[in-house]
Image (cartoon, rainbow, N blue to C red; front, side, top):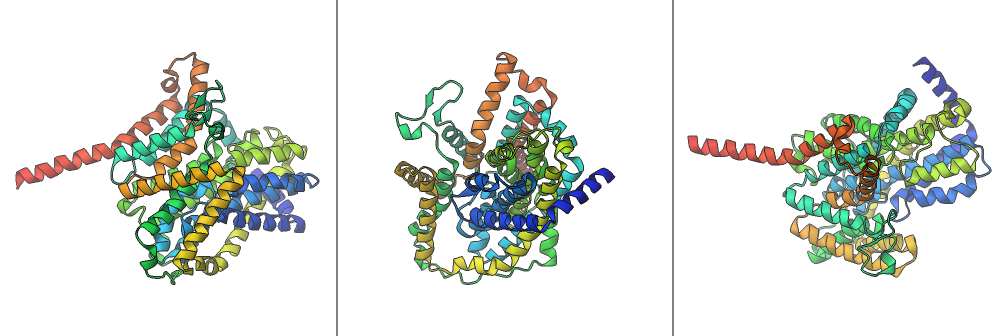
Length: 503
């Protein structure tokens, strides 16, 4: 404990260097702006910064780039709450309750909750990195393909089982998401799947195209369909202050999701997106008012925001101690470290403690900067809702088109965006949940790859998924997660029928 504290003091000595403080500020500010804009994302920004950091000291370079990374996750909640257009994948779950809050005139409160929850989640992750990074790196190594498959399946079933009206509709949405995830060339066999002879589909369908279509564009279509121009103008963003009761209400979700998010972030391949969905599903299960989730419940904003920011910190454990990136963003960070002549791995704590502890300390400084930057700007950022409805819808449409076209400069992607916008509209009209579709899309490729690798290692023996204790218990939890709602409904029907008989 004392060694960790002394190491962190050493790290603060590096992070509080005037130049490094400036790099932290520039990184989190740039990341926040990038996260607010649908279509850019942290991966593109990090890739562009590699040439800038090439000649920098490795500690300073990684401090700058990591600031962009967790700053983008922090800022992505803004577009999710205000426009229902998630800027990054890790903030999709935030839109489920954040956007309904904005529609109710509580945009300011939603943004404030997101800022506080993100700060606490980031702080918890820094403490976790300081205390148990070396230990958790050993736990992460114990996760093989079978364990990853079981973990991804648990994440998916947890979200599917929370489908408000129909478990069947949730399963249908998840299957559609899985089908979308395997479009393109199978990297293991070279087989074309669901491409229908189209060259544009060989590389698969990008997550951003689906997310912006199903969420943002579908919302535009829905507003136009029901005559958005007749709605009352939303010129009140609401108060930014939280009452004592509201603070108590979100304290539990923020604490639980921060810890959960950190541990999920430690696992390579999971990351902020999985953590945010699991944080959301956990809070919905535990809440007494779980039926109000998706309609503007403040716990539905606090949970995923704490989880995704904590996961950002947790993802640095496998990156720095094992040299294993857990996401596209951390893969770019790994490449940047290698370019700067630093090799992440078990020896990094001894060989480059300045990089390891300097980055950890800078994350705490960065989280303070993010809170100080964002809270005063919330009233101004939320003014976006004061725009006339036609202008707001046009702006959402333009952001979606620019973001998608900027991915590949291909008109075909714009047609896909339109198609998924119509699919999202249909799901909205017929009561199909969008969360299972999006999460299945994100996890589909990881699940398939993990399953196939596990079967290759075991020689095709399916018992490999239950022979190992971790994967077996994760599969048990996945089954319980999926069938628990059915058991609850059956018990309620029996109780209701019993009362009717007695009456």
